[in-house]
Length: 77
Image (cartoon, rainbow, N blue to C red; front, side):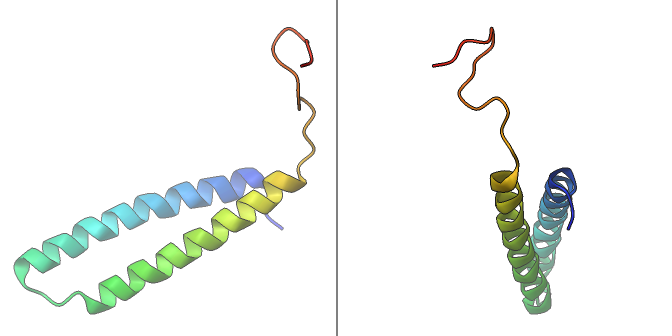
């Protein structure tokens, strides 16, 4: 199972790719070229990111929190 940092990096990378894909789709639409397959790819990418976000949340919940309830200076609230 991948670690939390890997999943976070993968989410970031895919979000950047989605932005590029959206810009390319806009260019195609302005040129009057069909974008059905590109939109289908974009929806698959969105689904993949949602899955990665769920995986990230599960990893984050399973991670032990050593500083829970503590603030800088060592005081507990």
